[in-house]
Structure formats: C-alpha cells, structure tokens
Length: 59
Image (cartoon, rainbow, N blue to C red; front, top):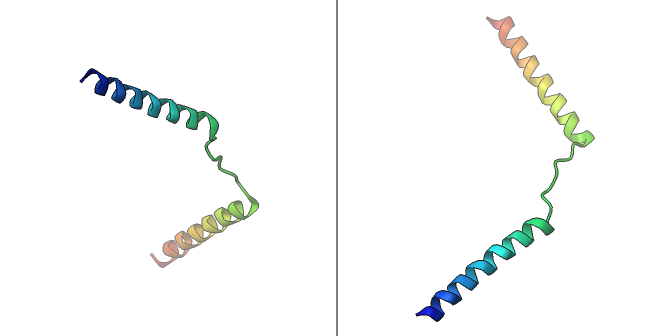
C-alpha cells in the first residue's frame, strides 16, 4: 500500500512540475492592436452614434 501512495504522490508532483514548466516556457498571447482592428472599432462607434441620432430624431 505504501508503494501505491508513493507512486501517486510522484505522479502528482510530476504533473504540477510539468504545468509550472509549461507556464514559464509558453508565453501568453498579447493583444495586438492593428490598423484594421482600430478601423473596425471606429466604424462600430460611428454606426452606434448614427443609430442613436436616428433614434433621437424619430422620437
């Protein structure tokens, strides 16, 4: 029974160590703001403001 618990403990320590190494080696993706993304944001804001203006004129 002692051998089984030692094996399980070793497996758990290996999993945790592997996860830590993966976090250190693989960087998280950074958000990149491209010209296309900025243009799409501006267009979305323009459409929103246009719709608000039209809604105000109709009321």
